[in-house]
Image (tube, rainbow, N blue to C red; front, top):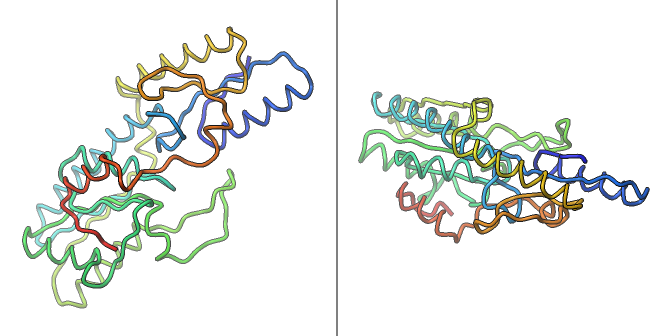
Length: 266
């Protein structure tokens, strides 16, 4: 038996091992367990680590809120993990109830112009006196210089949208001769380098037990998970086709928009 814990890349490796074992007619059971704080594995309701990451993100958001609220024309800017999907940023923004602008990779936005993010920041400063932004690391990459570099896993190295927004906001408010005090917080690995919360601890127990039961039942080339609240076994090729993304037409995203009160930035 081989139990493989990880995201899309790890599951792709598990599928390759499963295929080789079948080719060699080896009696090995390959079982996957979906693990990613990004919550971006297809068909799964939730992957373990996600709830803990959203909870950990609250500390960064709360700190940015206090900094922005305590400063004259304060603007809090928090960058959270999420290369291609904005689940952490969306859920963290919604659960905090303090975020004014939430930017995720799945929803395009403009920075300049009458409908841009910067103009809305002006409006927030004029009306509230402060503002709080939350952005996923993969958002707005079209505004940054692209790099051909890749990391050890073969993923494209992303340019830093957080630093870019920080500089852009400062420059914009200088140009319109309005004082601003931008506080940038990047918690990065602090989101995943924490003890699992109760929800994730229980989910890990359930997934672990189901993985072992699946192996003893003779299954191979599958991953265990929860789909539509049901414990399921799914063929690994079905969950690695593409990353799971936030649906811009979903109720959850619209709940987030209702919470932030942000307009359409397109």
